[in-house]
Length: 227
Ligand code: ADP
Picture 1 (cartoon, protein in one colour):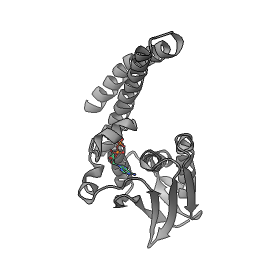
Picture 2 (cartoon, helix red, strand yellow):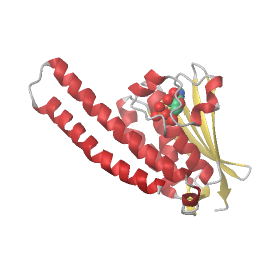
Picture 3 (cartoon, helix red, strand yellow):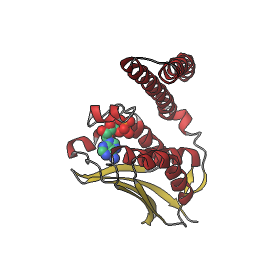
């Protein structure tokens, strides 16, 4: 009943949000507005878009938290190189805008069991955070290698880093280290909670390593399957 309610609610909310966003964009782009009014319209459009993203994330998170739905995670052999390529492609437009270089080094023989779509969503989320929090003109590294029966994927940026006291709680819903920065970057505060659910639902583990002022590495570890 809860899932049905959430699905209905998100559908009902999405329609007016799309309308608010569409009209606000039209106002800003197609009318001769005083500068303040144009800026306000763009802010309305951006906020509506964030609200839509939060609703999508809440719905996904709620379906992942449902233990009966977890059993539905499709398990087929998935090649890590394909997942990483898809994730990097999704983030490329945002990375290009900040002139970020993404270096990829992936062992092509790595396979895991799981859902290709959900695994790509998790990796894309981490690469997208690296692009959000990494400074313009810097590099992001994405690596994947076999380590003792596991496939380990690492995503490294050269952003501000994450203070140690926050690292445990990062993966909680709506937990933010720096509220203002997260808002500026259009984050929902749900990305890492979703990543954790996706990874653990696949029998894996995710954690953060970071040096303040130098950058962050997020690592995912999945049981590897023989290729
Ligand atoms: P958001 O949508 O706000 O980015 P996430 O769940 O993805 O939410 O991340 C939670 C918080 O963790 C972020 O608000 C940010 O403070 C911090 N964070 C996540 N990834 C990084 C990173 N690569 N570098 C620095 N801080 C990060």
